[in-house]
Image 1 (cartoon, one colour):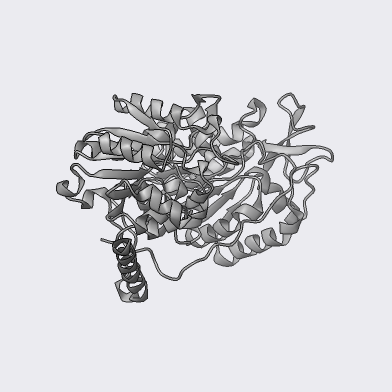
Image 2 (cartoon, one colour):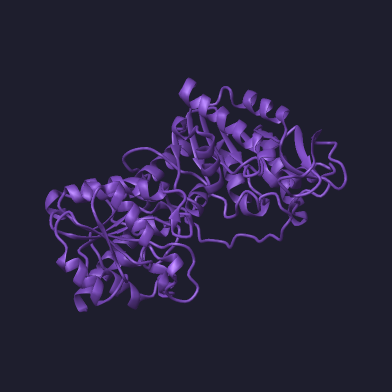
Length: 467
């Protein structure tokens, strides 16, 4: 006990000293490149449906840049061979019953796990899935994830029935070098999200070292993302985390110009901070999705029954004014596909943005808007996309989203532009379009990407060992 406390105190002092010595602070850099930038918290269907809205809770910000963090490649063979490694992955995949409908996050975790296996480590994967309300729920079991990971690895991935306790210790102790275990859903314990010290100690107890490869949860100071680093040393980043951070930091901080951002989704309230940050960094910002209509109303235009956040009209006006002051292009649609109701079988028509009829709601960009976007992006060398342009799940309203996906894919494929797709809906649309392979990077991140773009420190990254 005293050894653990002393080690924790020592690590804390080092961390504080490094923060205070600003002259030694360097840019956060990891190895290979790639970002799965921004992510919307709502589905794209909700992105246009009239609904109540909420404002993102403020998160602490810091005036220093994240220091370079260690990755698994910084560890020697001796530090990995025979070691019991706890790796935090993000296997929070969508399920239809027990069937995984998109295994992207599991596939993205494979390179780090293969590397650890190849070095002779005993690998135990931990993750959350969904939002269990009160203890274990079968529908949130990681069983399907363990099975799919086993298929991808070509070996059995044993699901342990818990994430703490004697059963976990026994399973880890009896595992051989190169074996892979998956611990049951960490959020079956409410202590996980509370970063409860007692739970943290139990979670870390069977292991020798820690790897964080879950960018999508790096913005959370949870037991499995931040707490365990106080008990496990070394604590380092995996390949996926490295890729996400490198692409996001590299593309936004030092991306080739001209640079553009495409920001979609339903709410100005949820995107205002990142929107303002991107205005500072990008030459052009395209706005799409349900948030368009708050901007149109801010410009004095009628929007029918389209989704509008009246409390954020002044905010939209301020964004428009800021773009003008900075000399940046803020690009809104010029035409809209409107519907008489929010339904896949609704009657539709294409109208100019200043001619949306009463009783009709905007659910997608029109064809002239897509043409204008193609022209605006033609000379861009770096493009970040977050959020769909319309309700792409409904065939009548998917052309705006698929159209801009095609534009980005062509820019990357034909002109070598860096294209970064982020946000669950943006990723889903890109996958559905069949153009995912033409993009530079598709991110697994969600709120983590937003917060990193906003200049916030990610607790799961800050807690890792420094180089």
